[in-house]
Length: 234
Image (tube, rainbow, N blue to C red; front, side, top):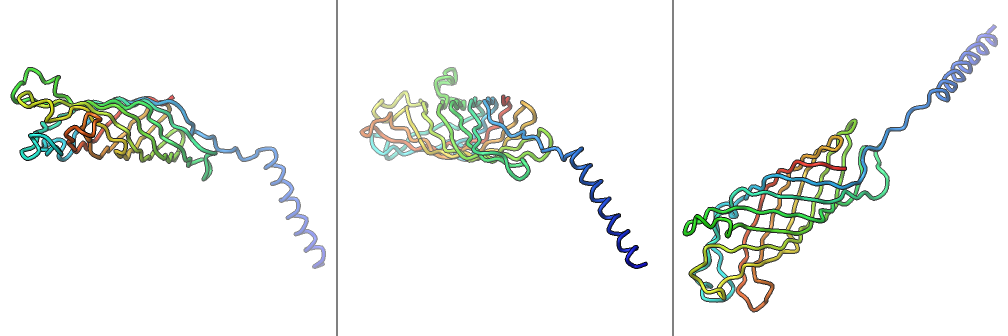
């Protein structure tokens, strides 16, 4: 009697396992779709000056007649930025296609900040802070659900700059208008859904003005900014 009971239980287990296996074959678990893909992006939005950049700075040139007294850099006001670049990914997505590593490559970054001239208020366009450059750095993209994507990146910036402040009364040999910094920094957070993209960026570092000549007076100016960009990713 016990033998028949044991055989019956084994038969039930075998039948149950066979039915479950057949259901799995007929209805396999669907593999999660990969939404983390590379592509071109662009963004446009306001640039908010931070800290000394928004307060105004007195900078002592490294040489020239103004070395002791310094040059006054007017406070930077709100400006605007345009970013154009690519998201490039290395290898497949992992963690069930929720994460992927790559490179955030901004091949064109143009931005400016306005000022409010004191001596010549009618010539405000002459005293803007202008910048152009590129930004590159590592990228981590998170896909928590559906088409919602979160990009976290750190980038090094190579920027060239132009600025002429209210220095009409000074000799041109006392200041420099052109500058560069190849190692500014930026941390950014972007949220994407489908092709829409929203980014918050904190850009920090200094700009060195020396007209690209070692013999010229050099001025180092802090240029920290907060940027909020709206755009598209294709």
